[in-house]
Image 1: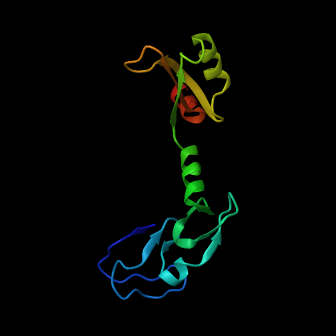
Image 2: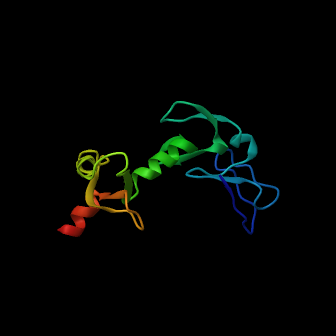
Image 3: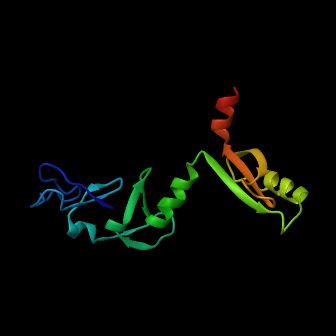
Amino acid sequence: MQHVSTKGPAKCAICGEVETQPGSFPNVVGVGRVCLTDGMKKVKCEACGNEIKLLTSSKLQGRTLCLSDHMKEIEKFRQHLVTVFDEDNETAQSILSRAYSEAPEGYTLLTVRRGRNSTHVWEAEYEKTEVFQMRCS
């Protein structure tokens, strides 16, 4: 949810009510500007099933999501991920095999390297498989 200031009054995306002061209707991601009456109505998150207020929801790819599930879905679209392993807790050989075998779904392992300025931390870098294949074709 965010407040957006505009030059003229906006209409509620749900009921069509016109705001009395420009910028007084909050913007719901994927829905648009909504009046507070419609914003306080309960909607159901399509991922976890919790009932939430429309103001604390968002629409992503046509699905109504709570903010927590919205962030999880956005995370899926990240192109690069880095996972950190600690050599104090396991051997380097174990870290290498885990980095490969426990790669996040839809990602390709690019490299396993020492963490910057570290003598015991390892970083495994992954890239979205589609992006990796496009770059390598």
